[in-house]
Length: 457
Image (cartoon, rainbow, N blue to C red; front, side):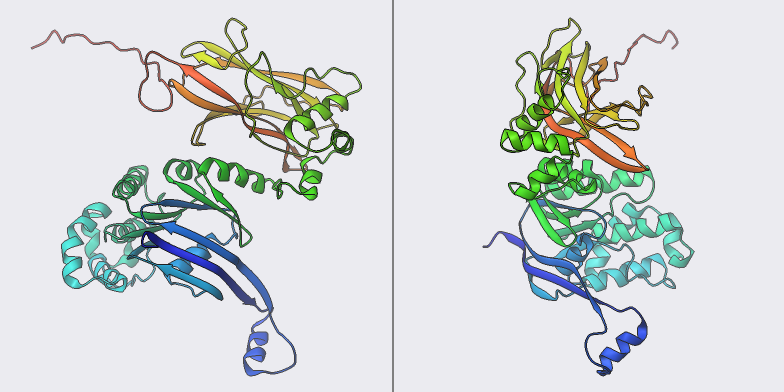
């Protein structure tokens, strides 16, 4: 189709790994029988279509294949199998400064790098002033780059890459370079590209930036594409991957991993499957004391999200949750400036060293706005016993701007220094903030303003 900027079809990248250099030589000379290498599949059958004007994010853990995929798209690497088609001139912010000559000064490296990208001397002449202005390294541009600090080096490299007016911009963890003022300049330029309708492929571990800028997000893990979709959906799935809780949905194996606790798993099977509601009901049934309340649901008629994301080992289970205002009324609508409380009840299924209770508030795009937990607040650091039930209340003033938000809840902990998720409920409730005065940004600084006339001349 005419509007496709990048088409990746069945791309695989396989590296040959040798235990020692002599094995590589033996294989090259055909000495001995069999293989002398092991194969590492950095990418496994990746398919991806990026249309003109899209901003697509790629996320995943270290070693998932993100940088390898970008290098294949930009032509730095060749795929072992598959095809990549690119329609448009690419500027790639991959390894900043690659191709710079340390003996050349900054000006000479600008022309060297620009020529390598494919620009004529006349085109580079026209862009030189904007490059120098963006880099802002002063007279150091006339000194050999081997004398530059690391910050000056990446500023010049970034300025060259970002100011060539590409049709497709490839960014790999390159926006957070230099000091805070230069970082702000980088993000401003990035926003300009997005507003101009440029095609952008953005790799970053900064999930807030991914959520803010990307129209669509691709999640990679160990060379495989786990999925693609909205930033919010993929970031939530990525967090499952980070804590080893990702499972392929709608399979028997997934249901087994959704509920790791033996007692609770048996109760879930008796309920006929591990849906969000049935897991909660099973947790209630598994408590012989009958103390765990009304099950994992919103109180007072508050509507819960039917498509909430839920996972964890279930060594502790959130069985009840709701929000109530300063009058004690259960509600999902809070007046800005008023105190409110987030409540949850947690059933312990096993003895735990020190569970951590947490909440997070996100905007509708999935950007985490605020949140806290009992470890941060030093509010609860005690061991707990199986069958015990705890009520947790977070009370604070509502200073968010008026609008719609999503509430997530969690119970986590550390087991022999390993971070463990016991139960997480992502985007479980909607939170509406009602306001007659909104300021700039996500929350109100509650500024006290004084304006008076100066009595002097």
